[in-house]
Image 1 (cartoon, chains in turn yellow, green):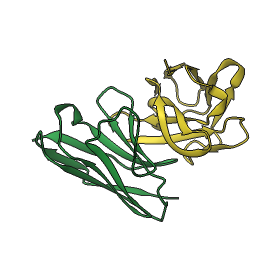
Image 2 (tube, helix red, strand yellow):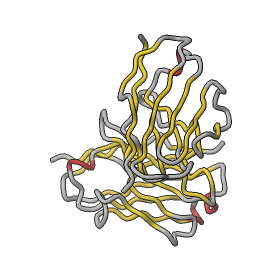
Image 3 (cartoon, helix red, strand yellow):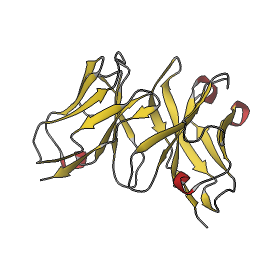
Length: 121
Length: 103
């Protein structure tokens, strides 16, 4: 079964750090670009960051640039998001998502169940 | 940055209705558009990619069309399980969502 399972969310104070993980199974992980997408409570979807299959191409939303770092370990079939200098507006459900096509950064065909990050004092 | 604007933001319809949701891009994006369905408490589900290609396992009552800046998602005959929020996406940009509710 193709599956993505996120972990690492929780309650954290403003200014602190948190590291999210996403464990992939059921597909050839190192063939595909991967992404983090977040959704604040009651709000829409926001792309956060993406990484190519070999980590050669990385992108970030302006809202997290300089604070968040995406990485992957293809040997462990895992995706990560290091979040530093967290702000209240980073409070959201964070999804890990897989690109549908290895050669095109278009749609995301597999999503995890999400991990909640709450930034509050 | 490309902006995607969906209309309407919300829509009330009945089972059996034909429904169309529109997504307009601020600049041309060829056919690089996807549509997702999201139900409360669940992750988004891919319905359509490349503007008009139906994702495997998605019912054929869902269809997509358009290219350039104007795109549509059509549900030909609404079923009870279709009441959800729908999003369009172009790579790192999402529309604001359209909430489809039961009339």
